[in-house]
Amino acid sequence: METSSAPMSVSATAALLREQNAARVLTPKLRALADETRLTLMLLIAERSRTVKELQEATGLSQTLVSHHLGLLREQELVEAVAEGRSNRYTVCCSALTEPVRLLSSLAGLAPNATGHSPAAS
Image (cartoon, rainbow, N blue to C red; front, side, top):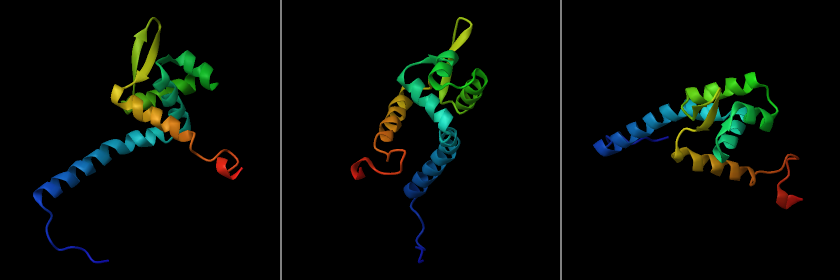
């Protein structure tokens, strides 16, 4: 493989550094979302804000497990907890993230079904 020996321009170097920094920041966030349970919680919260109890009921998971996963999502600043009485209501961290999470949900409809066959092949 041949590489260019010409130095990068200042603007190209700055762009590369921005991209590397973005990747450094995004990697742990994407790792958090790569877990099926956490992604499920994010998809539910993107629909509307929810309490731990509501997330428990929607997923069938224990309160401890839901809280554990929410803690990891909070740590990555993907969700926020707002006190509501004696519990917390969880929301997506920011409006800018709501639409991409909903887009991820719509991608599930494009995926092959659980049998490993695409819908068109049936």
